[in-house]
Image (cartoon, rainbow, N blue to C red):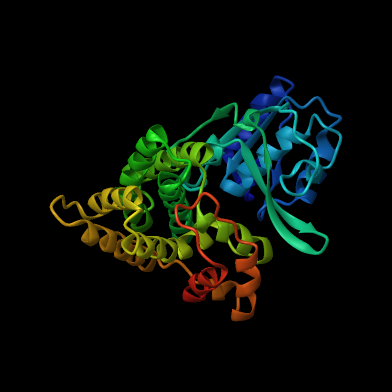
Length: 356
């Protein structure tokens, strides 16, 4: 069992579980994931347990814990370092075999409980990276999605993870690879977040709000796995590779800036009518108004995301050490091939500058 804290050490329910398992001659071992997982973390755990008769890997925690568990279950059958199988880093393709894997999310954000990839951070040739271990068989065998697990989630984590889920839903909805099914699921998730994120942030014990967020996060995992993501997650990858900054914070702090720039492009280009229609739909969800003109909905959507970012007190990049001197490098390695609008490097720099 992989967790992200020491909570299991003094948890009476866990103690009882361990005792009951031992009566059945089943041993439960724990590993902690205290930061975004690295290839070294995965190799260390798999080397420790590979020769044992390990039957199940269970990950209980946020996205980093779930990704770590997913990678551990995938690498236990292979006597090789995980870096060899990372996209863009390694040269080998994962065969899709794994140890039975159970995901139990305790935050409502990454949707990792429904995705086929595990994101790992490290360095290669002195260059920092965030890359995925991926195979369609790596989707968890079982996912327990229960809002009760997130009730004690801190406000800052609730905000950042919720904005991550919203980003994933909006980006998969707007993605050049989106389709009718992913659009329908994404819009349902966006509605849930619109009605529940602030409520969950204000009162963590609001179980109805927590339930809506858990459902939305799960949907975001499904939609991103099938439609892809956009520029906000491009920034999350390039910034997160070089700075110790939570993934959800990067997404939350860049969401409004990127969408405002997408919308500016829509307003200046009549050929982006399909994208404009999608933003109009978002504007109707966020405003609850059905009778305004197209331009009003687009501007309302941009303003709404600005206000949500401020309301949830999402930190700026500068708080985590990002400086003006870093912007060119970050922009140079930021990919946004699935984003509905293509931007030049200097435009990416200016977006980052807005959130320093």
